[in-house]
Image 1 (cartoon, rainbow, N blue to C red):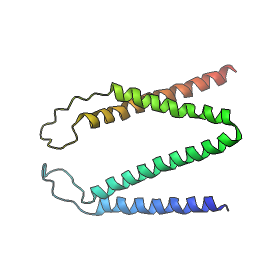
Image 2 (tube, rainbow, N blue to C red):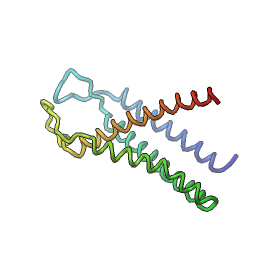
Image 3 (cartoon, rainbow, N blue to C red):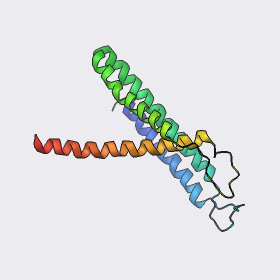
Image 4 (spheres, rainbow, N blue to C red):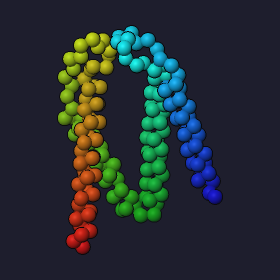
Length: 155
C-alpha cells in the first residue's frame, strides 16, 4: 500500500472521528437559554460546529489549491500547451465570481430586531456572489449533462 494512500486513509478517519465528536456535542450537549426568543432551540455547542465547518472549508480550499498547483507544475514540465489550457477552468471560475460580485446588491436589508454588524455592503455582495455563482454553475452542470447525453445519442 502506498504511503500517500495510508496517510490519506488515516486523515479521513481522523476527520470522521472529529466530526462525530462535534456532532455529538452539538446534539447531546444540552441547550443554552436564548436571550432573544426563549422558545427557540439554542444548542450549547453551536460555536464548535460552526468552527468545525470553517476548518473543513479551509482544509478543502487549501487541498484543492495545492493539488491544482502541483498538477499544473507537473503538467507544465511535460506539456506546456496543455498546462496553459488547463487554466481555462480557473479563469472561467474567476470570471463567474467577478460577474456575480458585480451583480450582487449592496442595499442593507431591513431586519427588525437585528443589531449585528454583518448587514453591510461587503457581506451582502459576497453572499449574493456565492448564491449567483452556485445558480450559474448548477445551470452549467445540468446543461453539460444534457448536452453530453444528446451528443452521445447522435454520435
